Amino acid sequence: MIENNIIFSLIVSLVNTVSFYLFTHRERENLTDNHKQEMIMLFGISFASSFLVKSIYESFNLKEVEKSIETTVISNSSRPPF
Image 1 (tube, rainbow, N blue to C red):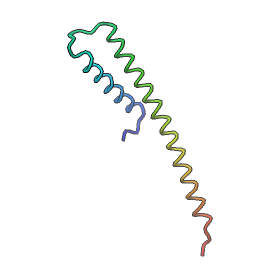
Image 2 (cartoon, rainbow, N blue to C red; image 1 turned 120 degrees about the vertical axis):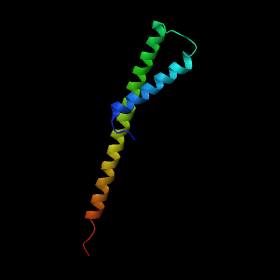
Image 3 (cartoon, helix red, strand yellow; image 1 turned 90 degrees about the horizontal axis):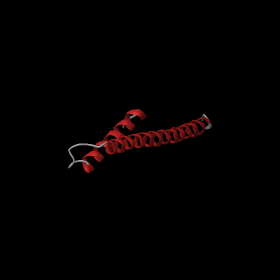
Image 4 (cartoon, rainbow, N blue to C red; image 1 turned 45 degrees about the vertical axis):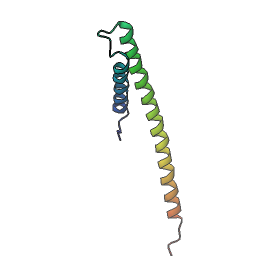
């Protein structure tokens, strides 16, 4: 998928903000300051949360890969040569 956390978070945040705009403000012709602040807050919260979740997920996934590599190296090197 997307390897870079910032680009992934940016895409997710943009999709969330655009869908929020399309579903809630379609009938209105102009946006008030309150609606603009809602969209900025939605973008910021979704960006931060998706960045944190993806970073934590990748760190746990990396630890599992390192453990699996260590177990295969130990099991293969401990076998007798005959």
